[in-house]
Length: 185
Image (cartoon, rainbow, N blue to C red; front, top):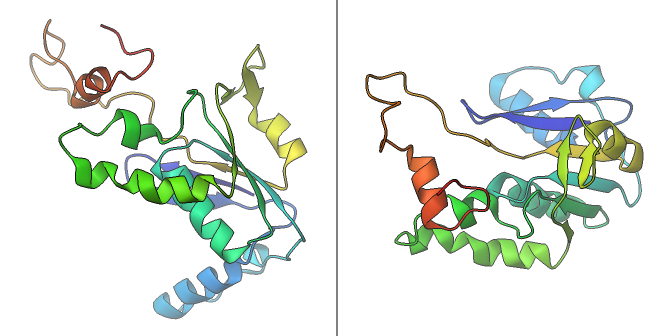
């Protein structure tokens, strides 16, 4: 399966193919009982032993997926793949230093990091040039691929003056402030 998130709504979409490897039935049953809906047959999963999972993105979405996946399936072999050489994504590069209560979630992520393998400096996309890998290649090597890569740019507000010199998005400013790689000076 592939799971991806709609950045504008923070909704997670699961695209199930072949056999799903995790016990999503418990989650699906909770959802179905809460909303009074039957779980469709195509969402029913069979369990595999020691499933291998690639999580693309090491920000909050990626680490929370890894945390709860390890809790549900301690036998899962999880690789977190990140384009930056360091983990934690938005928490590291998108939260201002004067918000230590938000950044403290890194402590939780550090304990998760002890149970998974971090692979940095790898871009996931359509092209397979040096340092890049395609989703299709990941699907060949893992039982499951979770896309938790977040937004790579800011959203335009379409307001007058937005394009003027000296007007920056909060994302770009905080990225610069936190020394995010590749942020324009």
